[in-house]
Image (tube, rainbow, N blue to C red; front, side, top):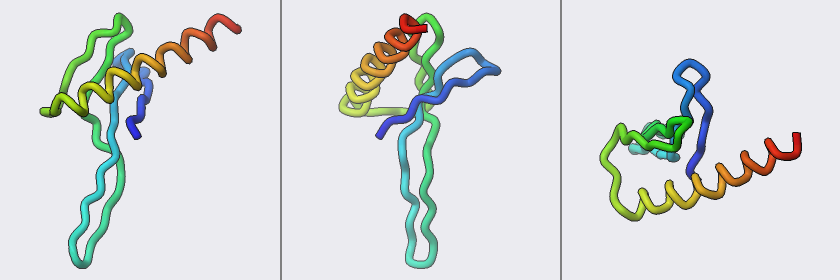
Length: 75
């Protein structure tokens, strides 16, 4: 699942995707920062992404930003 974390220092949303690094004796799981979305909804890619992943990012960002807008209206 794509994760959006707000970066207070840079005033932007960091886009992170899960990754698993596994060998015979070692396993690491976490999130990799692949893009950033500014407050004016401009996206900056930090890694190469394929079109399928880009589509997922854009769709989930659309849903996420809609939820943020609805929460702001309730306040």
